[in-house]
Length: 87
Image 1 (tube, rainbow, N blue to C red):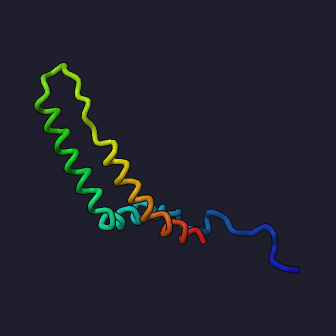
Image 2: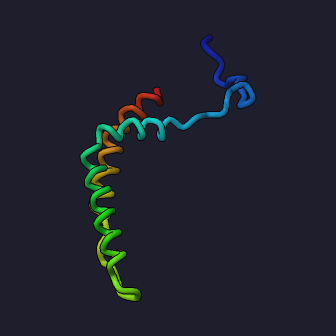
Image 3: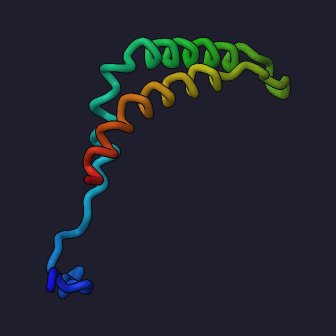
């Protein structure tokens, strides 16, 4: 007649689930080294601009593009590994 539709499995039977994403993303950093280097360089330049800007003056520099490029690379690297863990 096949397996039962409802399982007798309870959460008490399992260990706490562990999110694999942080570890996988950390492993992708070497794959995304160029984007990380660009982000780090931009961050240094913006911090220098901020330090040299007179108090009260607005700073318009940011690293949004480099940040997005880095995380796009991480996501592209990590996604197949994460989805493979779902099956």
